[in-house]
Length: 280
Ligand code: SAM
Image (tube, rainbow, N blue to C red; front, side, top):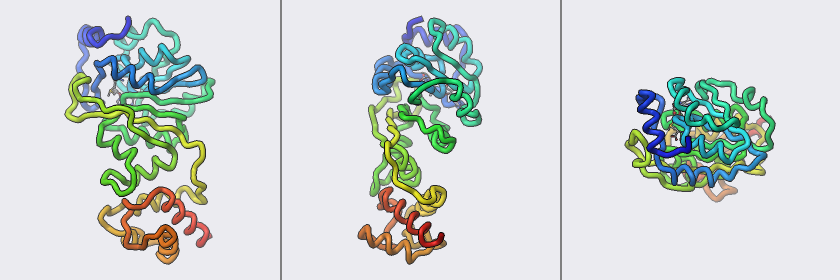
């Protein structure tokens, strides 16, 4: 069945589907939005595509048309019949009915041969950040991530220093990825209609990253630096060697009274590496 919003709605109705808010179920009903996401993903035959939350399969359908192989994780088994009948014309889709957050993704991906991994999804809003963090912490590190997310969350992902959205997550993500917004998406293109707007963001894995002597220390320092947003680095990092931190900050023309929100990624890298050098 070729995808169309009306066909999808009819099929859901036929299968007596009731949307579950607790699963973040807001399905896209605008083909232009779906096409923009798929075009931006720019998938080729070397790419394995991972979709988290196929829902009724509308994005999945378009992804399957341009992918050699697609793997999907869907938490809601009630969608099985709808997905099967929507996607029956494809033989390049594997759907795993499991919670993405608790699944062993690496061992699933090991079964496929591919050169690049792309994640393309309209993410469930209640777990957007945990999903992105899992992709990094489980060392899956997709080459590209194109995802629809709640606007405010997306703005934090791509936030730059000295903006109100900038936080420890922005620094963490920026260490691995170049992140940009692709499109704004109105709340009117979903059923049911959510009470927030969305954006589609694209993450591209950095080909070279800053060298870190101790990654764990780096992430701890970043987290601690933003612990109390209105406090200075002197206050938030008082458990660390402030003399070392002061001399790093001076190199970057700031002092201990600066707030974390003003510091770019490279300053956190420098602080972490200098502390590692001094104390190891
Ligand atoms: N891709 C579909 C679309 O765009 O129309 C549905 C997107 S909807 C925002 C999010 C989907 O993720 C739902 O189908 C929901 O059941 C699924 N989901 C929610 N939590 C999940 C989880 N932890 N693991 C896998 N799928 C999940």
